[in-house]
Amino acid sequence: MKALTIKVRLIITLAIAIVLLVAIGIMGIVGLGTVKEGLRTVYEDRTIPLDQVATIEQLILRNRLAIAVSLVTPTAEAIRKNTDEVEQNIAEIGKIWDAYMATYLTPEEKQIAEKFAADRKHFVVEGLKPAVAMLRTGKIEEAKAHVVNVVRPLYAPVGEGVQALVKLQLDVAKHEYESATDLYGTLRLSSIVSILIGVAVVLWMAWLLVRAIMDPLQQAVSVAGRIAGGELDHSIRVERNDELGELLNALRGMAEKLSQIVGEVRGASDSVSTSAREIAAGNDDLSQRTQEQASALEETASSMEQMTSTVKQNADNARQANHLAVGARSQAEKGGEVVMQAVSAMGAINASSRKIADIIGVIDEIAFQT
Picture: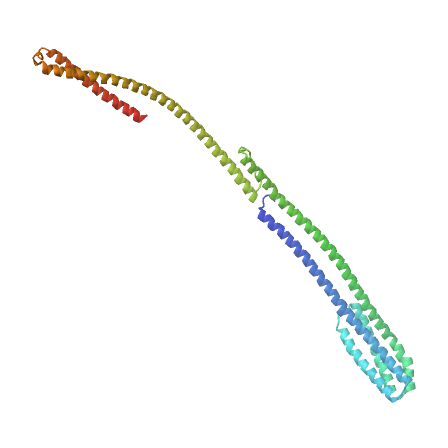
């Protein structure tokens, strides 16, 4: 069963249920057909022939009664009426007997019917017709003797034949009833057993199907819960090839993929942590360098203030020298050495100014980088 898909299991379960229903339905239909055939046999082959035999017996009795009435009241009108009735009854019995012989006859019934037909023929030919002829010709005494000596003895086997036919019809009808009763019991027992077996098989298949669906679903729910709880290292066993087995395989693949992704994320987190520590160290170093640069800038600013003071002092000296040069032209030649010294000092100032410009450029670059 584990090798079958849920779809195939459902189809098998429904097919078994349908086959059992069809089998029980066929049994019921066959049983109804058999019962119908039994009822048809009882009606067509037994009830109708029984009515035919009863009618024949009634007509034979009426013939005997008509002859007896004619012998009691031997008037011409009574004899004519009664003898005509006897002939009509003989013809009617012939028609009814032909219809009876056209029905289904058992071997025993056929044998009894043939004997009855022969006895009735003797009864009609040797008994009734001569009696009718005697009555019509006015031979009343001969007719009475004929009835006593011939008609009555010939009627005995005919009456026995009628009773035998009636008894046979009742016996066969009883046998059909008993057969139908036995068949009903057999069909009822077979139907009950088939229904019980069918219900048991369907319940068993349904139980297998429910277990085949619920157990993997519970396993899938448990696996999904463990995955949601972060247990990605739990092994998932798959022993099925159906749709739920595919679901468990998918969950196992998802767990493995999630475990791989978590490992990659964990490695990336470690790498990011290392990079963050390196950046923090770099920031600390940059902060230290920035503090050193700030200290250097403070020293540079102090030097620039000193240089500015020197430049201002040199400018004052230059102005004083210019006044001295204008005022004491004559003393210029004498103070040539002093002027040369002043020129040298101006060159030094110029050099210092260039250095200051270079320092300012360095400060700008440092500030830009910071």
